[in-house]
Amino acid sequence: MPRAVPTSTPTPQGALRAKHAEGARSARPARSANASRYRSANAFRKWASALAGGMLLATATATATATATAASTAAAHAEAPVPSGNGTAGDVYVALGDSYAAGAGIPARSAGPCLRSDRNYGHLVADSLAPSTYRDVTCAGAKAGALTTAQTDAGVVVNTPQLDAVTSDTSLVTLTIAGDNLGTSDFGFGDVAATCSALSVTSPLGTPCRDHYRNTLSTRLDSAAAQLGSALQLIHARAPQARVLVVGYPAVLPDDPEQCLGRMPVTMGDIAFLRAVLGELNDTVAATAHAGNATYVDTLTPTRGHDSCSSSPWTEGLLPTSPTLPLHPNATGERAMAGAVLRALGR
Image (cartoon, rainbow, N blue to C red):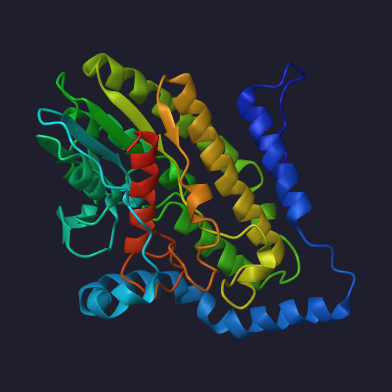
């Protein structure tokens, strides 16, 4: 994602962007064989009729069928083990974040539009640690600004500022945020993926999505990183004794774009681009966490091989087959994220 900057010593964020832009370019497979090119084009023609409405249909279908399909799909995914631990009575644990932290769409849900699940990774961590108090204020659609300002939907407040839940007696905070800042709507990264799907028919063998966004997504991540950094300072000020864990995003797309052929209506070049964007998201969040005296929890590594294009997804695709939102972790994915958090805590 080229970006014009003044001639100066590269910043850490600039280095991250350069690394992932190079990754996107190198990940684009060189196609010297005509057979591979025709195979890609045929796959995109197959998906063309579903592109325009696919994202909206996925969201409506996932939400409407979540409860009805929960029991029948529970056994369809391998269980990601969650280590057990011995909690300490008197601890106060606060869970903050967006739809990935909320487990949005996974039954049973609460908190209205926040779609907060009682099977999200925060609940699973709390079940293992057994704190005396657990406060879950995660909310679907939360951008980094929702940590310090009320989150609204159509002008109606759906969640108060999340940091209001952090008090002086808080001993543990987990936080997943910034992914929704990539999009202009509450769908966040899903908004970007839907745009890439719609653009794929304009250049099935090219990179129309990368060409469309250019450096826009990097700029949005810069803004989100600044907000996250400020929020971490506030958390430490409000709860000086708290252990703060910034939890990264799991595997959404595979390292090899061709694994998404016929599964994701996005060009192979743009799958590589989106994969690089997600890499930049995690690296930006990790760098901000380290600078803000917080522990970064890697959930990408333990979920590799279970992305939305795999045969055993822990993150669902644009048309989920397990109750969750499109391109979000299912119940097994949330268990994997909980396991990563508990390991970071030495449990």
